[in-house]
Image (cartoon, rainbow, N blue to C red):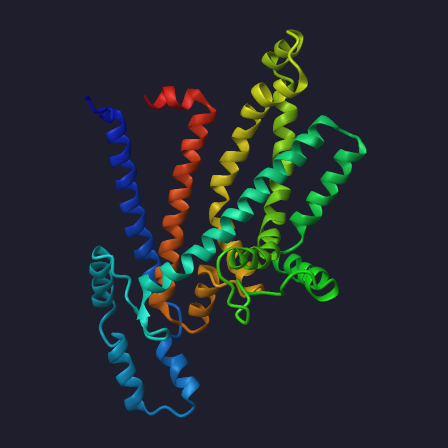
Length: 333
């Protein structure tokens, strides 16, 4: 039985992508390390201020324990050598390795981001198509006004408004957290509990980016509908649903997919605000706590993990773009 071998061009593409990822990791780790080290304050000063009256000997002992008494270039070499061994350092605040702490918080962030992106893309795409097929009518005006309000309102205000409306006034949804600690549900009850806690933070993050996708999809659909191949498909007797799905939507979705890849970094940044407002135990909340506590090793690790996540999502966007547009596949082959 013969096994299919990966084409040589595919191997070169994979190797090139892996080299790009390695360069991105080294570059981002270097920039984040020196940028945060040059910022005023460190974890020792925060711990000393929390202690109230810390002696000079105690401060020096903490610096030796954290490795902050070494020259900056030596700290950088130690960090990069540990990174080569997949060791991101140790969090003295949480008393565990940084990699373990990030892996514990990563699923919560991925769940929030995936749900928010899916809501934003599908809701924004649907509303954009609806507005494009009703240009100038009340549906188009209403969708445009709602999209403008969602885009102009800061994320934390959207989150607070949803909390006041659905948690305080109506008492339908929980205020924050990822699950109810008092219940300790298991099985499907646990899934339902997490889903209830996920509604408000994912909706908050999705509403802002949905506004962008609405306007982009509306303009793209209106442009594609004027193309000759769409008019030809209509003249041949194809129904409106087939024309939309086969001829319009596939080409109109290309700018939306491109924008999704461009905005992935800002979506992660928005997750920091949303996770802080809703006490969602993800990487965003973890990075905010690390910044306040000046735990630079943990903060560099979170930023590095977020950057790798952005790169991987952009690879997925490139693959999706190639599936939607066959010309991309032909140019790469």
